Amino acid sequence: GIVLQECNRCSEIVQNLLSFGHRDVRAMSMVSVNNLILNCLKLLHPRLAALPSEIISLFLSEEEPCVMGHPGELMQVALNLILNALYQVRDTGTIVISTSVAGSMVLLRVSDTGGGIAPEAIDKLFEPFFTTKPPGQGIGIGLSTCYNIIMKHGGEITASSEPGEGAVFEVILPLLEE
Image: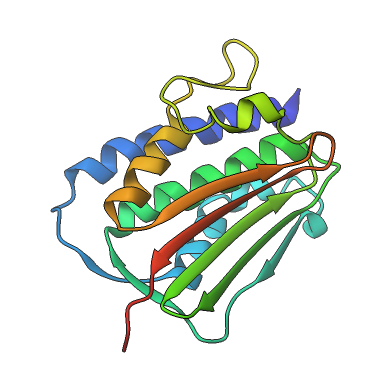
């Protein structure tokens, strides 16, 4: 019960951020992917405080990877992925968030030990209004919005899952060379 309420409250935060994000000037700026994650966790701190601290493990790249992008939009993507993972694990599983650099790309991975995603749902995850959540829990715009944002940033977002084994979401963005 509590966690679901929290998830709903979180999705309200994301909605607020969504509308907030649209007011900012569409200027691109340098975004540190590590800071993006840390800021998301700060924002979610009131929610996370109620959960066991070991739920989230962070593995942030020492290279401090940066991308060129809209901070508000990228924040929205990261928040969405973290909130979805929290929704999946409730208060029993674990979430691993990592950033790394591979060649000229930055990888952001959010994996969870939740129930996983059915194979037939994986292909539809990023379609508008598709949701695996029960009625009234999700409106199905989160991941399609994420997909559109990442595409616009010249990146990719993928999901992989084994039912019962959790899910892994991977965002790949062009690395901003120093």
